[in-house]
View 1 (cartoon, rainbow over the protein chains, first blue to last red):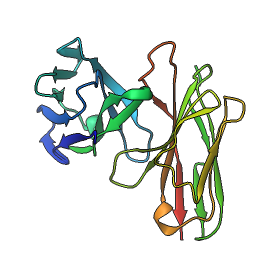
View 2 (cartoon, rainbow over the protein chains, first blue to last red; view 1 turned 90 degrees about the horizontal axis):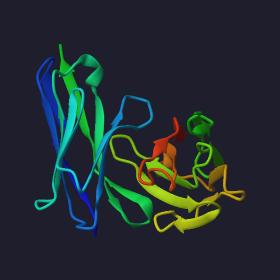
View 3 (cartoon, rainbow over the protein chains, first blue to last red; view 1 turned 135 degrees about the vertical axis):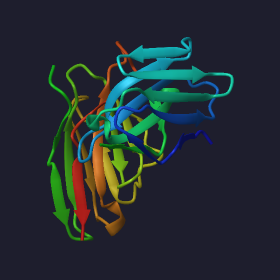
View 4 (cartoon, one colour; view 1 turned 180 degrees about the horizontal axis):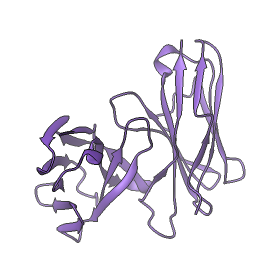
Length: 111
Length: 115
């Protein structure tokens, strides 16, 4: 069936360093790939997304890249800050305006 | 623009009891989703509504879970009777098919503990 694999499950980086989270998807019809950030005890919030006709998108310190041929996409966070600590979820679109979710990556920023 | 509202925020019940959750989506959002999020996992879709019709309820445990969206706006999700494994956060999300249909906006969730 359709699925999204996300790695790593936990990522610990030094404050100021970069963090990269990777996802692969199986449904070749997927054409929308959002990333959500979920802080402890809070709701998931959309932080960036990319569509299949674009290879890369940036928004300040965060960027997402997409390789449709390889069916993988990645989230890049540069100059990490303590407030970046959270669980990050990737997702891929499927029919009926649904999303297939990754299992999440817990990002820990070490001071 | 007001966000997605959910209530209650927390609920503790004993197994075999019943519980209901309420969701009010963003105004004008025709699509409404209920998710179950178990600690340490990603959201799992339970049911999706388009206006007041069900689009997908294939992962809803229909022997104990039910949901409705009678007037195409607010929605309720009910569990009866609850089991220990139902302990989770229940998230409601909505999206607008007119604007960006895949962008889902989440409510704060209801944390359910079944003892």
